[in-house]
Length: 290
Image 1 (cartoon, rainbow, N blue to C red):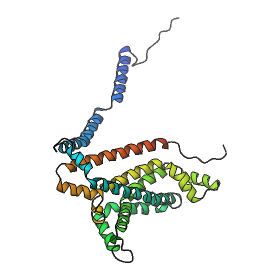
Image 2 (cartoon, rainbow, N blue to C red):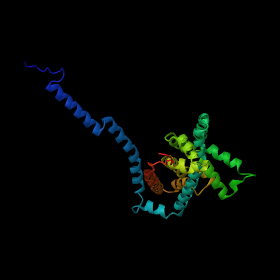
Image 3 (cartoon, one colour):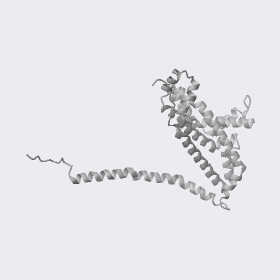
Image 4 (cartoon, rainbow, N blue to C red):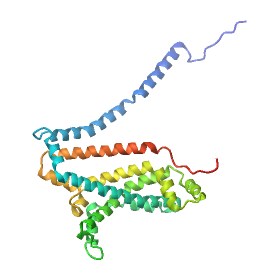
């Protein structure tokens, strides 16, 4: 007896071929992306590149060719102001890490109820204008017992303190995100079981696991310090922000060249951060029984 095989509904050759064509078209769309995604990408590229191209075109109007760039590098104030702001930025990053990492670590480990209060405090720089902050610092530290504004070192110290306040929202959130990605309670208990103290835990356990987060916060803080104008104009004239403003008020083409140079230096810093963060995938582990 010969049994006839009945094909299920929808399994005809035409339907199968249509399904294969549909699957192939879906794979093709996935490989090339949705059209709206490409439109958004192109708009984003134009949004960032067109101003740079226009700035470069303005800088090239100087005669002879590249004169705006050669004049900028020949100006001694360019190098001195940039180096000064970079040093202030590095000091700001180091002190911010020393302040925020233990605070965020302790709040997340021992006092989670204080997180809303700490987050509110770190958001205050978004609410308080920098000009209000700098006038408050000048009024408080221009007379005894701490007349810091009377000396260059004191003014630079006030500038660092002000920049630490400005970098709080970025550095704290970067550190808090990094702590959220690791199990700090287990790491702390394991380290304490091995006899490690709090300082050893922070330096040898927590900080290595926060390398990417710290680099991200450091880059944002450094970018703020180098380009900041309001506070630096009242506390430190050699800073890079006031130099850019002074250059723009007295030169025609050099400000565009200096802007592109600073933009290039920013991208070099980003590349350096990416290279430093490449080796951070291996996290610190506590030795013990296996």
